[in-house]
Length: 469
Image (cartoon, rainbow, N blue to C red; front, side, top):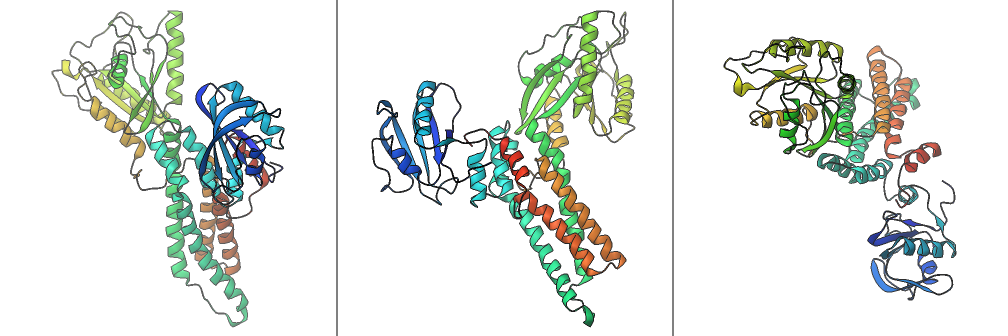
């Protein structure tokens, strides 16, 4: 972005009709600029005070009664002198006030420019700035916690701790270079190997958490699949607590994909009820089945419904999938998609007089008995869904990576830490080890902006923000 010393203005609230709207102004001389259009003097007023008055256009025609909040240099979100104007939420009034500000010497802010100025003025580091965008976009309680933890500096502090430990050993290695002729070692190689092993494990755990962070951020796709009449739509309705899908004993009732969202323990799950998979000559049903197969590809968790009731039998065209067939299909799915969580749901257990023992050939396949009709076992299923996503992470305490840029930099960090570790084990000289450690530190610093960050990277990051942020 150019002109970072300019006075900038933008709507901080959506550009639509509302009870009130807020327009933000930031830059040197913001209070004096507002005085040209406001009915009161602001230059002598204290920071963080609110003032009621009239706002005028360039022809001194009153536009609205407004509240003006002022923030002194160093005490605002951007770190600059700033003013926020709260007006009535008419789109006309919003636009007229912005137009009036533009005629006094302001320019419209670029996307994310307020947050970029906060970063450049040291009010936030880069990972905290990115957390603001994540916080605005959160759709679930756990995603909100992850973004808030990052905004408060939890991730930054963890990375700072890693860098500080590396700095200590790099300085000792480089000190040895000054005494190369004396052949002395200041850095304990055994201690350094232990440290590198610890750091590599920490970075790899952060890398592993990206899958969880991405799921929390975007929602977890869960496909409910199976043959017709195995209870897929009944299970969807039971999970949602409402009659969302039509339930019938007629085969092929669900002919298209039905998608709904469900929050469980603060995690957003995207439930996908699919058409029953069978051979059919019916064109519309066949299209629904094709879409169902596509949803299996997209899903993180696959719930494969099986009919465990005593009435399970052959139909005219297809066998309503029983327990053994479901287990065989689940094992085939796991061989094809080992990264997915495959769960065989033994439905209609309330109508079964025998015990079903799952023949699970792969650890990635699980079995859960339920009755979708009366709700038995559904709570255990919801607990399983949460556990399969959170794994062994403590969401209330641990840092969870949810940003692809952070993942990339951590991945590169781990590579260079491992190079340094291998160098120490094979007796590589200290200058080469120090070089690898310095590169690792640089990649850590890229996450928080502790080193000079390329302008193209900053432009990419902040361009994804809304205008008023």
